[in-house]
Image 1 (cartoon, rainbow, N blue to C red):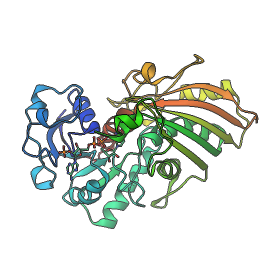
Image 2: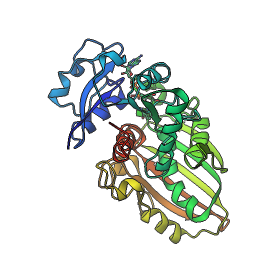
Image 3: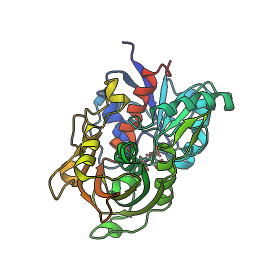
Length: 351
Ligand SMILES: NC(=O)c1ccc[n+]([C@@H]2O[C@H](COP(=O)([O-])OP(=O)(O)OC[C@H]3O[C@@H](n4cnc5c(N)ncnc54)[C@H](OP(=O)(O)O)[C@@H]3O)[C@@H](O)[C@H]2O)c1
């Protein structure tokens, strides 16, 4: 199979490093270009921020180029750019014919931009045709959700299909790597919990409704589920843990809900895409799991499964409580974007 050349925009950050690590072992995609801002002209290995994960020597020697289409030679670009930079430059790449898969929030809620979790709403990629027509672009932008939304929608989808969700109340415990590098000052977060993350609660609520919505007549009709989110930052490094309470139309039992979650599979599993975990949702039985330190890499593709635990009944027979853990820079960012690009390739949308 011919390898597909891919670029990473804003490659030196927390998420960019995950891309470099995951793409270095990818069977279809070959990293051809890295862009940046402050690091332009430097070798990637020298410019990369923080304590980098594994950087192959071939990538360490690559020069970081300016973040403009004319410097980028690729069949597809991944964009873990900060919001403002994404707002400005992703449309320029799409205009120049690049498929853009973005982790940034800049374009997620635009009406003709798909917001994809490949197991949950793969049919929403058809919105690409609407976008290309509206904007007269040769390329397009596809977005992935906020890292907290991703972990939440994975169990919500099969539960919604089985019991029809009416209301969701979620409280998150989000790792510091979710804030990028250098992120939250150490003196603010060590030995502490911060019960506020700017803009996060609104994103979790609106994005979940869009992802669980229906693609109909060229647009997305958001799901009518009431969602209340409270987001906190905690001193873990990677992995967002979320405490979830749901109310349903139908009666829900703990054992049946566990079966529904554990048996769930989506299109990426049916297509056997390279980054698709065998089980997108892993259900744990232990009374004190999942824990970020122990369970964040559970499953056949490390960091790509949502790990659910403490599934328990609530006071009402039409309600349920559980915890879900997901890796914020893998399933919540680089991993989900790579899986989305695999889906785009499998559906003939990358030339
Ligand atoms: N961290 C997570 O868990 C997570 C999860 C999901 C989504 N996201 C989203 O992913 C994006 C990146 O997050 P992050 O955590 O990786 O942030 P980060 O660690 O702050 O890294 C961002 C990188 O972008 C580069 N950059 C800044 N302005 C640029 C510009 N104008 N052109 C090109 N490159 C530019 C910087 O590179 P230089 O060194 O070259 O200046 C920097 O290394 C954000 O939109 C974030 O919301 C993050």
